[in-house]
Image (cartoon, rainbow, N blue to C red; front, side):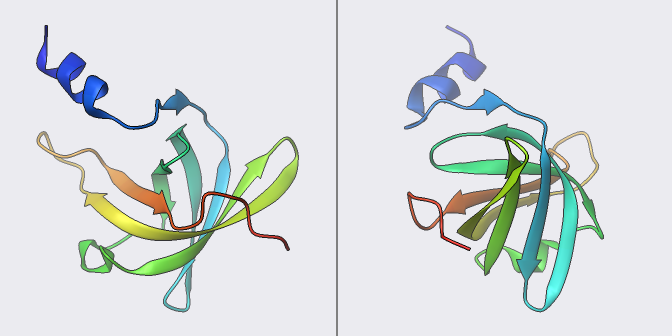
Length: 104
């Protein structure tokens, strides 16, 4: 078994490769970009504009994700911020605070 298979086996919820638009509102700033994958637990956000600084890990925000031509709203926590390098994934990982979608 490879290391990547071990990581996948430990995940509580499977990830699905989904590229869709997002808007993240965090500490009075807005970040926009695309998701690369989504699970019941969270999402990985790529191409954030402006870039999300690593100092925002553990901060809470509001994530709006375009799903089936409608914006779905979630409360989330930033759990990972990577940079463009050979050792880190660029983008940000967020986890859902509430399992269900917030009503607009």
